[in-house]
Image 1 (cartoon, helix red, strand yellow):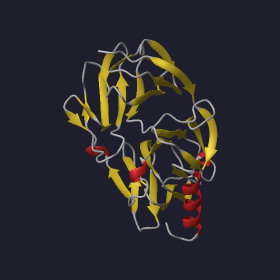
Image 2 (cartoon, rainbow, N blue to C red):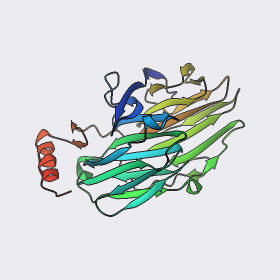
Image 3 (cartoon, rainbow, N blue to C red):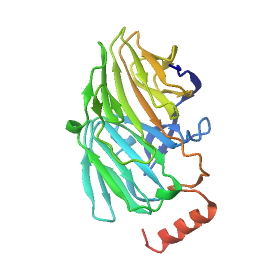
Length: 276
């Protein structure tokens, strides 16, 4: 089997978004603009209310998917179609914005730790104008597997050790795994050979990915291949995400991601005309 290696390393960049929420931007920054089909990866983590309390008030999306994975804290989402829901610890929301939606994500706490991720996944040209939809997934619906001793994996999307993640009908055929490694553990993971893939260390001091030490808040872009090896001298957690690259033109303007500048102008006009 072809082993994947690390072809690029990126550290999260401190920034703010929404109404001033402090976060680390890992994908979607100067060092890594995108990794087809992934457009953005943010980690938000703070126990200081001033860093997150204003949240993400209503804002538009068109042409891609947003994936929110909560580790700690509570957020409430709502949209202009009347959808409402709560995201608590361990829950996932996979939102397909499609042709257009106005969406908000606001904290449901005034103190304590708020910790999680938001990932943006591109949609192919054929799916950019589909009807919006949500996949709201509670923690109880996410399988937890132990493929080898000392390793626990939450399977959000894709399949591992006979368990299938609850995310369904996504065009990029994603794999989304939260891997917890005990000290001294070692694990070989198979990924679809043609998929783009990355690993991001988000807890513990470091993890060993494809034979190289990766520090906390550091992302590894993985080469094409089949198998990638993980290990840890001390306990660590690693986010592993893979998806089928679209190899299509990308036109971006803030919360709109289309294939051409003309389509971006159409998205702005539709938003201003209240057509979302």
